[in-house]
Image 1 (tube, one colour):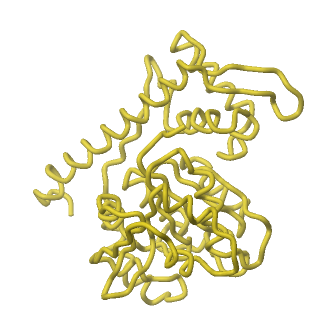
Image 2 (cartoon, rainbow, N blue to C red):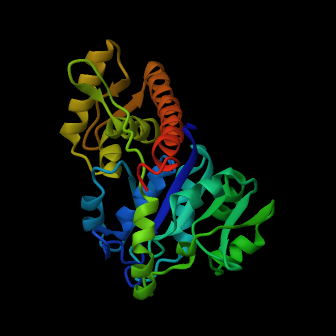
Length: 309
């Protein structure tokens, strides 16, 4: 089910290379990238885990991301991670942003620039050199997922059919790998400044909220997996907590949002009702509208007037 315009993927699988829990500033690099994605309005966000998987799941358990485990590998290739993420996002969004976790310093406005560009493969460039993240259309993602061979991601991208463009951005973070600690620290202040944004979180309630971003993610995962236990695993939430959230939502709305079917150890079949699908789509559309309005107003009222800067 298509749910949004742009989804995102973060490759954090390689046991020998990826360092998702590395602290840069006061937060981990995996968390830094998730915040950057969210500031650009990207949903859903998929994290392909492997390295420090348990710690990554704990670190991001309340950040509204989806966890996909790769096959255990000391040197998981970027292409394999991209294929896992793109296979999952197929049919759910029009465009997909992909980045390795070890390149954490690109800025939210760079993402926005890529999103507004036109092409099947869009690469950011700084000083004539291409970096991460990259953005692909659903058609290009289908080609990447279908590729079988020994080449790496750069070779596969080169072989893609469709329109390919490079967009020059004023963002050295697209080239900055965590191996360059001096450059990371040099960019830290400016990157933190780029993360300044209004934190708009959709919730719906009466006396107290009964719907929020975490419940939206749970509904989205149920629409995809049709299984409560799988949905809970993908977002690192307990089975009992998930049902408590669903039951309260249904009491407040006055209608069923999921169809329940009893079934053994895997939790049976749990799908969204037609009313549940309409509710989920309306919430996502509402959130995207409010997000864009808040970004524009924040820019006009705080940044342009230099009240905050």
